[in-house]
Length: 496
Image (tube, rainbow, N blue to C red; front, side, top):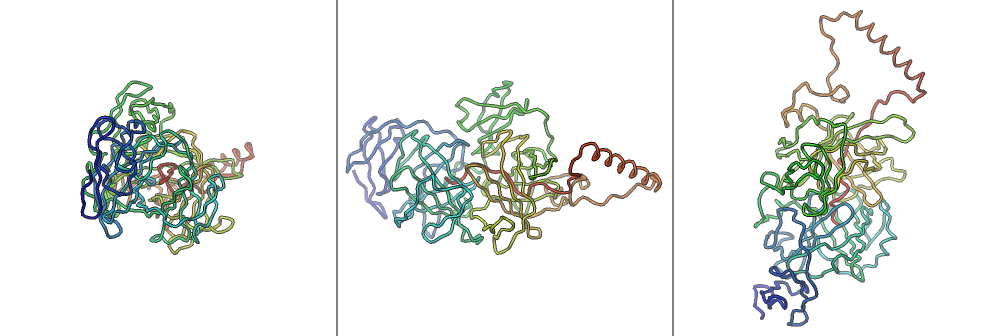
């Protein structure tokens, strides 16, 4: 049976498996998943044909759900379907949005935020997926892009009505390109889906749920309510997963790092962590930066080493969460504190990588180094593993910062700015004098009145003698005077 809607023709028929009603709100939708028996059906004229049974969704406890609505590009939309994909680093979802004019769009996860994209109508020729190399530049449709991701993915599950349906479990390639030029407002994400021939292209822009005026969401913040429950596979203690998109979490009792990429109902893989690192800001702490309340949900310690340098340096990264803004990183390094978020577009890096242009400013290279994750606590929207390695470049333009992190299959840019320790201390209730001696913004050393100048001179001479003995015996390159990371680590959760 068909119903005349306000803008288009609706279609409703009985599920060929269980007889329950299956409704198509969009004339472009060809596939649907029965909400009752999970049968996958395809429209053939006015008849529904069952083509299989859909696997259960991995419950991500996200804010989005079928029936949620909002505003984008000057018209309303409703979420009517969902595709859930898996790849080596975890899972992500793409929501089919039906616009009021009858056209389709996609609301997809993007590094802890969202991208709203529309299908590219022009038939653009693109090379095979293996011709794209992460980090290289390419031109599609006259626009310059940076290749930021190339992954093998597979459909894990689906719900609602959809304009396309990849074969369940069949692997295919997805390549992600991000526009160059450094214009933040014009930043775009081009996704190439090789699950069909010819490949399907979609072009999107970064959005926040608050800007979309979303209604009908599940709840305000999954981090504030009761989340998923699981048992630690190492010690058996209860572990509560509060964040909507967590791919990794640590046990609060034994600090085991648990992989959630297959869902809490799947086989939980874990890794033991020795030598715990105590974060300066406690997990769960809420602080206000630039008028936005951020909750600390994750912490990781990382080590870096520059080419040709025998010595390593360390820094800490705090993963911050806000229900409507997504995720951000608060970084504590030898260079001081900084606040950064992943970018949608790709800054344009000069030949040789000595500078990068973004948002109308030129950033100069400060450091190039190898980074490795050595310890993690809390929840993360990507799959965290001890020993994860990326190649990093940090750039700066005054107090503004850019960070590039690259793994074999993904490249992530983050942008932000430096923060004085006093700002961090006020936001998260830290001691005003709690800054580390290695912090760039730490106050100057002032000797106590009870310590004589002669004593200070003797101590300095002893320290200099010890340093000379150490350098003579080790043959090293000397004491490192800088380093650290400006950007947050986010390998995963991209708009694929």
